[in-house]
Length: 360
Image (cartoon, rainbow, N blue to C red; front, top):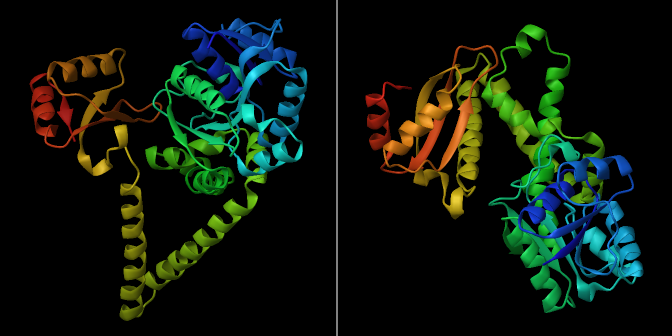
């Protein structure tokens, strides 16, 4: 792939452009906002100059509701030989694309499962998609050359291709992305009017849970609107569980011992089911969380401490599969959770102790 047109220079479009540029592609940028194009170009994502002839691939990086019209316009111009998009909802836009009589033989829907709280080109980075799933939703008549072109895009961005039907994709992302975003926002609303003293106690639990609530509300209205019924069904199912939790918790505060016991069993069952569901989420290279052990190391809030820890860990000859930092602003120490393959935690712990590190 030599020439690419990226239409939409927000977080995802600019990140894709940066990744393609780093792999040697010549990238053209287009957006209805000239300011974001200038920013993306200044970051090295490509050029604002229009291509002189049809490019190999056009990447449509606009909100889901705009994809059909933008794609129809691009095909009318004949700007590319192949087309794809990166919208987070697929079934509705695909139906509209067919209704607009777009050429679906040279089009593949796409959705990289990556993002960030910071929107716009200034939040972009070339490694945003590294190791992430990138869903592709070809139509029944998508030709092989177009699919291969899109697969090349995914590979150049360092992502992992997953081919699905559009409707199956929407049900899946409703479960793992869209409904959780609404839940995170609901939890965050509890903090809005809370006392400052209470909010100041926020630790990694509530920070992790509400992290995605910091995303652009306008963008998420578009996303949720395009997958509204799926998300509504999931939230309705969740509301049943919330009702059970409320009933169980109130029973735990009752004076009657039998009611307290029943309430405790209800809440424990909910927590156990949550633990079971969490364990199903795959980790690195499809492994399960239970295949890892975690070494929690106390770290001081001084320059160079993280670098020293990683250096000492590498000397132990143990590969660190994942890292999680637990630290609040202003605190003198924090915890670094190092995930390693099961059976190697003791090896790493002993090696770090010899280097003077403290464990929890």
